[in-house]
Structure formats: C-alpha cells, structure tokens
Image (cartoon, rainbow, N blue to C red; front, side, top):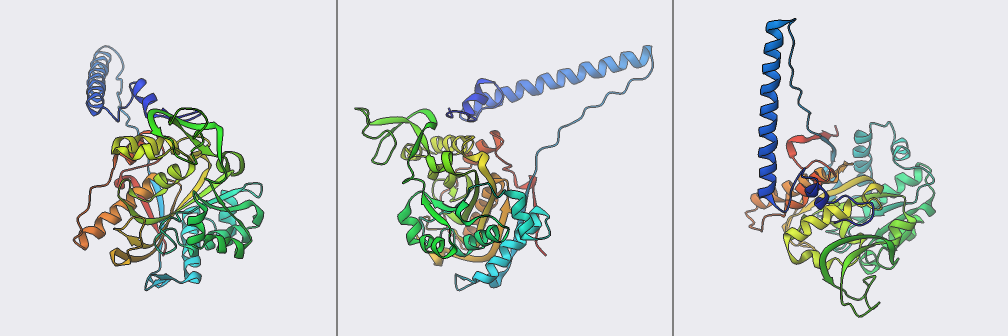
Length: 380
C-alpha cells in the first residue's frame, strides 16, 4: 500500500476493479464484467425491439471508450555521437529539436517556459551510477540546463541530482554544475522526510543511511521515506535516463530510477520480481514524487543492451537519438523494445524483462504500456 496521498494496486483490488498480483481474480472479474455487459446489451436490444413495434422507432447505440494514447517525440542525428563520444553542440541541437516537436513551440525558450515557471525549483534527475559513458550523459543534461537558463530561469533554482554524490562526481556532474553555475545535490545526503513515505507490509532489513536505522531496537522496517530534496525543495522534475539495460527492471528507465533513487529502504524490493513490480509504480505514483515530473527525457545517443551498471561499450549501439515524452511508461516500453531488438540482432541471450512493472504502472494510470497505443513523432 502506498503512503500518504499515493495510489496503490491494493486499492484497485479492494475496489474490485483490477488485479495484478492475482491474475485468476482478474480473469474472473473480467468474465463477470463481460457477462453483465452482454446481458445488458441483450436487454437494450429487446427493449428497442418492443419500442419499435409499439411506438416510434428507437435507435440503440453502443459507444466504446477509446483507449488512452501516448505521444513520444524522437529526434535523431547519427553525427551527434562518434566512437561513443557525444558532440556537445550537436547533442544540444538534437535535444532542442525533440523538445520543439513535442511541445509544438517555436523556440526552446518558449518550450521551457511552458513547462516550468521562474518560481519553480527544477530538479534535473540523472542516472549517474554507471558513469558518464553508459549512464545519463552530461552533454544531454548540459543542453537541458542551458535551455532553462536561456529561457530566463534563475540558475540558483536549477538542481542536478541523483541518489549518491560520489556517483554524481565520478560521472562529471559536480564539475558540470560548477561550470554552469547550478547546484548538484544528493537525495541521500539531503535526508528523508518523516511525513512522506511509502508503506507496505513487506519488511526490509534496515542499513546505515535508512531513515529509521538505529532509532530503536527494530532492525527491519516497512516504510520507505521520500528524500527531503523532493518534498521540501524541488517543485518540478525533469527526469533524464539512459537507454541502458537493467537486469531486474528491464531498463534503467524513468519509472525504476526515479522511484528507487528518491526513497530509502529499497533493498527489500529486489527480493522478487513481484515485489519490485508493485513497489516501483506505487512509489512513482506518490503525489510528492510523480506529480512533480514535467518531462521525461531518454538519452538514446547509445543503447547499451548488456552490462547494467558497468560500461560495456562492446555491448552497445550508437543510435544518436533523444526521446521525449510526458509519459514515463511509454518511453520505458519503447526502451525495452529497443534493448530486446538489439539483443536479437547481436544474438545475445538474456533474461526476459519484468514487464509487470509497466503493466502495473498502466493500471495506476501513470502512462501507456502498449506500443500500438504510442504515437511517435519524428523530427524532420
């Protein structure tokens, strides 16, 4: 169950609408709904026939609700990456092209002003653990920060962040922040908020750094607290992730990295695919977190389909792409498809990704997880 002001899969099950952990129940509910729907339709048709025979003709129409769709903008420039090294100037142009086609604005300044206001504290979330070559690349983040600054956003209200400062420094973000005149902050070092948490019956062994570690005799905890960086400082988040495989989540994408890097006591979720599939979307759905995300950006300059936290460029393909959407589920789904496609091309066998994460995220209405419901807009 999610903590304060969160959406949860358990709530859906309790309401009898959908089931994730119990597919048999879901099938039963769907069968019942279908039976009721067919019965109701027969009654309508019969009533229409009686009215047609005894009075003026009556039309009966059955209207189907269209499924939600997602929009993803993709800009490509193969010249933006050479021998796995980004060309900063062309990456900036690539980022701006994808931003303009997604927002429909005439300039990048107008695009950024439409996403954030000058009063917002904007946190640019990166994935720094794998380093600057396989994680989020500093050239992509530099393009985002420059766009914000050129749109008139105050430098002191821009923060580059991830969970651990050591990762941020090793990937080059401390130096990048200094050069651009913005802040770089670790969500872990900022501490955790007593009043914002994800609560579930699954117990986790508390380790140093967890909010409740050492507070009493309990060595386990069922709460994952949200960083004060997110609850007390940031008002908007731009989520920037690499196109990098993840052995548990399929991709080091928008849902998994933001959820796991924003809270403590996360080791417990890695004990099984089911636990991870429930926790990731429910944590993202916390009002203090997911509601602050205004844009998701996938750094698809390189697709690394093996290696996870290690830079293995011999398991990588240069795509020269930037992908943008407000839908994190759609972007992650496309990323997993790309990783699977690259593995097939290179004849690499790997475990199947945990797609329940994205199915559950769809159930919580975080986004669209079916590729045939994703509208891809490509930059000319």
